[in-house]
Length: 238
Image (cartoon, rainbow, N blue to C red):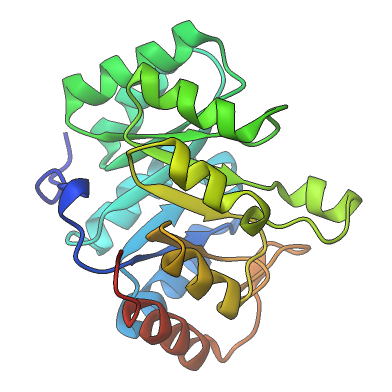
């Protein structure tokens, strides 16, 4: 198993966490973007789903080797084979894996089992749930460590104006574990998430990743990421 930082205490967060979503298809671009993010103050690095599809386990292994002190999220979006997928990513160096709330209860339970066995955290994603609040409550009951309150890329493209802020208060109130809001957030919305009790803030498309091309959004990422990190880190957790 790859060396990782000690298992995080999510109940001891003293400031919001900025997670950089590396929704890219090239590991070289991902590492370059991650390096800029780390310099700018990003706390966690996410091996996004496009990157995992393109590069597989090697993406996590290479991010772990290059950034040994930064927690790594593997956005697997697991729907089946939960234990094996979580085990593989844990051994590659991931600190978090993502299982979908639309998966069968058995799959979520098996991912949680693997998380306990291999010392990683499990994120439960409510993307596509008919009732996202109920989904969050259900996943907490099954043992996930974090709720990902998620409005998907395609969903936002079809139904304009959707935002994870729409139900963030209800989700935060429904669970006792940390909440992360995902889905096309602006800088102001990202800061608002932290202020409203969702301390794990994801930045990616469209702020720093081009969601259409799955490439870095521009060549001047550092000042954008620095402002995002500074603004979010200034929020005091309630």
